[in-house]
Image 1 (tube, rainbow, N blue to C red):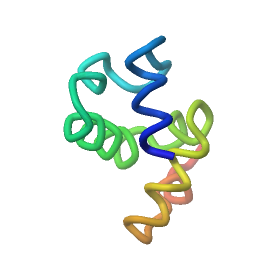
Image 2 (image 1 turned 180 degrees about the vertical axis):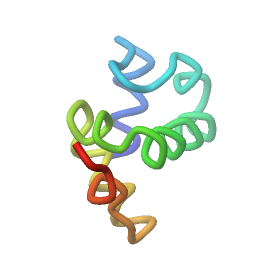
Image 3 (image 1 turned 180 degrees about the horizontal axis):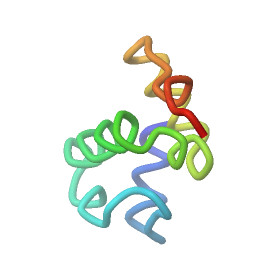
Length: 68
């Protein structure tokens, strides 16, 4: 999942991940993590597979804590 999302960001950008995410895999993970915790609903809407991967990795679901 992360490799596919990273390749996609490098090729066409992302609605929610800063362009810096395409620098290298480590920066992709850092930027994705930042968005996962700071803008979880946006990540869930635009990159649901990546959101699920990070939710499983961190064993947290920050989108549930957001009042919409």
